[in-house]
Length: 300
Image (cartoon, rainbow, N blue to C red):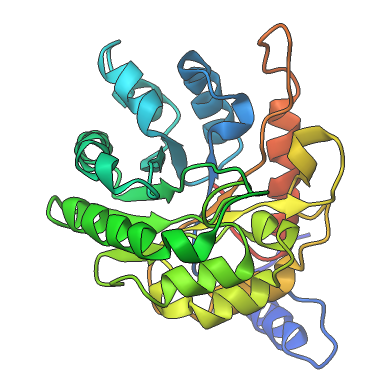
């Protein structure tokens, strides 16, 4: 059937009007972009090649690696060609550091500076700060709080000075796990230098309401991990976006009210593979993509 230009325009206006009607199932357009972290493909640096290929082929708009992975690839030809082939920009890297020991602060800051320089070298701008793991059965947060905050302030300044944004990621099993620990730290650090990267699945796992946390700290969020949680045996209790108990609709509705320009990163912990293979990971990332697309996010 033939339509002229005027008829097509009228049809477009009619569709827009229909979408605006009360009770319409139209999905609102989202302003933030969605990427994917490389952790789902495993911690091994060589797995980054498959991760980048899969993430790019699925249309995600950014990639997050690890500081150690960037370090490995920098001495093995770099990541530029892989990222370019996948048409995928590097956004940043997860950087685990020791925050609870003041005696290690200088060396940890130097390591973080090096990783920050690599992040910049490969086009990124975010260093996701991963707190050190502790024995949660004996850990006394109040005893360590001031050391943790001082470490974060010092490390944030180191990265700020080279133009890389530090974003704290509260993490299960670490020195910053619970809701109260997260709030205590983020309310104490100098947020000029240390921003926040909330992880929705790990917040829910720790008993916090992810939507409320992102609402309370919206002004200092610089990066986000969209992880879901179902408490299952695989992936440390986590699952693809939309398959668990996190209210992703509520979370992203809050995030979309932010005036800051940051990327949302779909994420899922790797499943143990004795043979080191990465089979099936593409499908897991596809599942997260389906849910995020249904929430209104665009993909390449």
